[in-house]
Length: 299
Image (cartoon, rainbow, N blue to C red; front, side, top):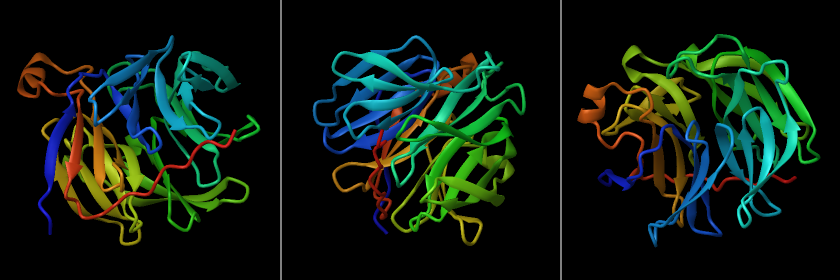
């Protein structure tokens, strides 16, 4: 086993750092600060951070085939042009729920953008229950709702054969699987594949590795766990120096580095003093496993 190394690489303190995605052609890590209302790009070579400020909370960002990014901001799917910082609405959801906002999202293997909603937080991880739904934005900008009654729509990814969608509703404290029809983008047969232990915290963002195992960032748990979805158990735990770990992705030139985002919003003074780098971004190397490149939104 190579030795695992954990470094704090982006020392900026984000309120709720989230939705990291590696953009190979620019060689940058793209991510959001949800309640900081911004989309950022960090270049590991120059250490430069570029930022676009938005007018609403932004739950997730994904790459877009035609250039720029697709974002889930407020209750809107939108295109973000990085060059002129313009935001163009593609579709709206949850128009009957003015207190809702988008949360985590990811592009499926066919180029559709999945993202889910939740009610705005009363306090971190405290929400009005059952207000969220999971949506897909198709390349033609039509939207499909998969299901509702979600508390905090979170981590999403697909099995390597594209037949299973993995999904997290955080307050269920579980990782779910759904049968996935990659031709149509339809989901069915939702079930739990792993229920978190008490000390593991709240399941948040998630990504899959090249061996088909899931990496789940555990909010308040200060860790990422590697879950074998077939066996329904944790096969590895990597602890981080901050409790409020929010999401993870693989990146770097061969996708062998893991980037982990974190949050500092809502921390009491004692915890903030003990964990001054909360809200920063960490890089984990030496995991001995690689990720797979993200798909770009096709619309």
